[in-house]
Amino acid sequence: MGLEFRVLGPLRARCDGHEIDLGRPQQRAVLAALLLAPGQLVPTERLVEGLWGEDDARWPKAPAGQIGTHAHRLRRALAAPGLLVATAGGYRLEVDRAAVDLFRYEDGVSQAVTLRYDDPLRARELLAGALALWEGRALDGVPGGFAERARERLAAGHHAAVKVLHDLDLALGRHTEALPALDALAAAHPRDEEVQRLHLLALHRCGRTAEALAAFEALRERLDRELGLEPAPAVADLHARIRGGDAELAAPSAPVPPRRPARPCQLPPDIPDLVGRAAQVREAERILRSGVGDVDGAGSGAGVGASPVLGLSGPAGSGTSALAVHLAHTVQDAFPDGQLYAAGETAEPGAVLAAFLRALGERPVEDAGVGELGARYRAALAGRRVLVVLDGVTDPAPLLPAVAGCAAVVAGAEPGALPADAARLAVGPLEPQDAYELLARVVGAERIRREPGPAAEVAELCGYLPVLLRSVAARLAARPQWSVADLVRWLAERGA
Image (cartoon, rainbow, N blue to C red; front, side, top):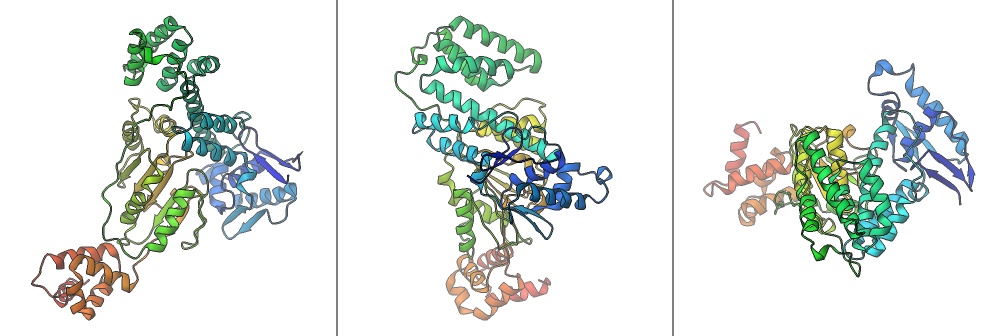
C-alpha cells in the first residue's frame, strides 16, 4: 500500500494503513504546500510567504531556517528516504500523484468531464466516485495563507462539481434522489442561480410544481432586493416553461445528455509563418493535452495536474505571444467547450473575470469582488474543457481555470506569478537557418536566395528575434525596389 496522503479534509498521511503523526500545524502547512505540487520544486521563499504572509515584518527570525527545521521533522515522521528532497532554493516532495487524494479526485472529475455529453451515466458514476473522496473541508486546520487560498480554490471546484453531478442526475431522471441534496444546496447558496435552476426543475419533476413556482418568486424578490437584478435568462425561461406546462420538462424516460453551455472562441488569428519552434510546440502540446509536463529547457520544474498551466517566457521580440496563440490553435480540438483570451499589462482581474463569465454564458454580479467572480468563473468552467490564454497579464493567478479538464497558456508573466506546479518553456532567439526561413516566407524565397550574405546580416542585426525579423521583412516586402543590402544599410543607419 505504501504512503498515502489526504488533503480533501484534515491533512492526513498513512503508511501501510497506519496513521502518521505529522506534528505541529506549521509543519503540516509545509507538507500541504509540497503535496499540492508533487515532484515539483517549491521555492523556500514561497513556503515562507505561504506560512507567514508577504509582509516580512510578520516573519519570525530566520524563517528559512524554520522551514528547514519543519522539513527535517517531516522527513523523520514520514520515514521514507529520498521522499522530501532539499535542493538549491527550495524543497521537493517525490511522491506519486496517485498517492494524493486530490489528484485522484481531479482525474475522476476530468474523466467525467470528457464523458459528460456522450455517456452521462458513466460520467455520473465517475463524478460521484471522485466526490466521495472528500472528508470535509480541504486542509482543515492547516494554517497560513497558502492553505487558505488552496481551501478557497478547492471549495469552489467542489461546489462546481456538485452542481454538475446534480445536472447529470436530472439528465438521468434521478430527480427524486437528487431533490433532498438540492433542497439543502439551494438553501445554502441562495444567490447561485444555477443551483436555483436545478432545484426548480427537480421540484417540478417531483410533482411539487407549486413549490417550484413559489421558489422562483422568492428568488426574484431576493435578487431584486439585494442586487437590483432580475433572474438570469436560463432560470426565467425555466420558470416560464413550468408555468406553461411544457411537456418537454417531464422526467426523461431514458438518459439524455445535459444541455451544452456557450462555447466562446476568443483566440486571435494564428500566425501563418511561425518557424523554428517545432520541438517546443510538440512539448507544449503534450503538456496541454495530457496535463503532465516535464520541461527542463528553462531550468524549471514542470507542471502536473488535471488543470495544467504552461508559462512561456523570453526576451522582448522572441515571439512568446505568437507562440501562445499558435499553441492554442494547435490544441483547440482538445478544448471543445471554448477558448478564452486576455492580453495586456493593464488587464484588471475583476474586469477580465466578468468578461470571461459573460463569454461563458453567465451573468457576473455587479460590484462583485475578484474572489466572488473567481469562484463563479471556476463554477462556470466545471464540467467543461476550456483553454485560457493570457498574454502579458501582470496578475494571471485569479484568471487561471484551476478546474479539472481545463488548461492555461500564460505568456510574458513573471516566474513568481505562476503556480509552483506550472510547466515552463523558455522562448529564445531563432536559429540562423530558421531566421533565414522566416525572411524567405515573408519577403519571398527568390529575393532572399539572391542575397544570402545580406540576408544573414539582417538576421544578425535583428538578434534572430522573430518579431523584429517579421517587422523588417514586411518593410522589405512592401518595397520591391529595395535589395536586401538596401535593408541592411537602412538598419545600420538607424543603429540596429
